[in-house]
Image 1 (cartoon, rainbow, N blue to C red):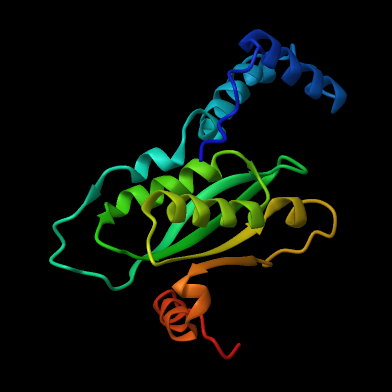
Image 2: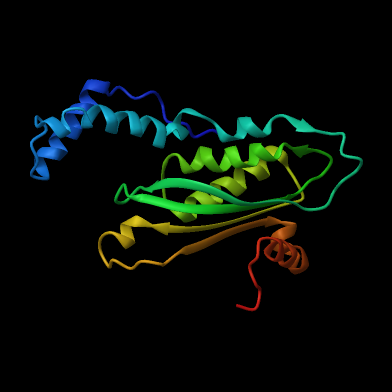
Length: 199
């Protein structure tokens, strides 16, 4: 399941010099006082923003709990806030994800579902791809009867450049197993997360 990038061969110094190049290209002087430490700060921020490349989200789902007294109904985690970056313009994507699954005989700690979302969000992304990655990771690792993922996000590549349209959000979904096959199960999930089916 892992698609972790191999260890890169770019040094911190090279990364910082790339930031100085971009500052010069934008018309700035990287040597002026206010920008002297900017390359270091940007490289440090990248280490945080893109830490998802150094982890395998599926690992978070490997520890499950069997003692659930036969519980086999829907498990839903709503409103998982995330920040990501558009792979086309490197601009922020700010949103929230809703994740649900129908367990077989095991459940996973709910914080692990949030960590799966974070693991994929902290990479350069396309929202459609991220939605599918989250669903497929849960499906392949937990092997539940079904998985549902809905992602709502605003894209700064659209609000701060190009068409400059604010207040616009994009919604994507991936339904697998019982959520795809059974309209009632899908409808219950959408009701849980506050999405009306008659829209």
